Image 1 (cartoon, rainbow, N blue to C red):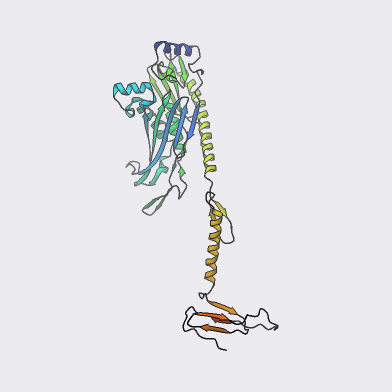
Image 2 (image 1 turned 120 degrees about the vertical axis):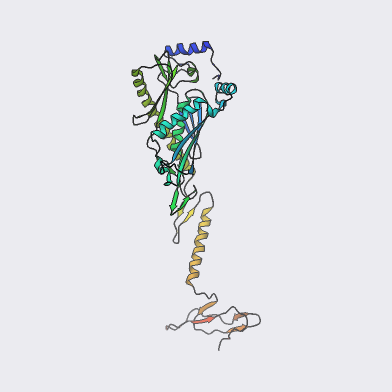
Length: 389
């Protein structure tokens, strides 16, 4: 698709196609573009594709101080980066006006709409973001970057923000007295945010003085439309926000009709989002298998598949067994128990050695049990007591 301003003939062609019930990209009037969610390896990162419109979103959490009026509630903030590299029109506007992408009016409108549908409608439970009331709370910041602007970037940004918050995990916090401990991912599994509902934005383009409305306008249709109508709906048939931009008027009957279309579209997107999130969790669960547990008579040790853990585990078992046997024995390593048989022991004090002259008889004919004689063999070379004959 050529990304440059349309000529007058192209605009007239797009309008005539809409009047005939055919759109430039081959869709119907009430047909939206396909949406695709791709979650990243880190929590809170997602790439949303709405047709050829591409948006990347990331959510991060940091510990901040709460406000005075709401000491037990956290924060959820948004920022939209409408890069001039995303579209030729944005590049021209940036070059001629000298404004940065963050100060563009379209980016500011997207941020206000996100705050309305998510924060003001309490899609996220901000009370669960509290760590210590009046002292520390979690501040969730969602950064949205528009990579390719091919029409209806508002809906793509809203879908990306909702997907990031749904995929995000915050660290586990332990409060002991006045001390606050934030556990890392290696120590404890992070927990998801408390999401009450998923508001999905569905936008419509207004054409021909409000007589024609088309869902999900493309970049060519946005250049000829007279206004936009955006309705944020969740799966519970609740209208979370309503936004109309442009001077074109619209009848009330068309608003209710498009609200029904918005609910169907929001339900479809919600199902796709939950399916994509479930598939991502399934892939991550297979990729990162939990350590196995080897059951032994002594103890159970974790076994990691990536290391040769079998040998390590049995070495630990043998070491543990040796330690237990050592604790049971008396702390005299050179003590030997023998039967009351004939034995001669010769001790050489100079060379610190001894020898046995006769072998110990293995069995005796006597049926009476004989008490064993304990012979101590000290480690010291000199001063050893000689055995009495």
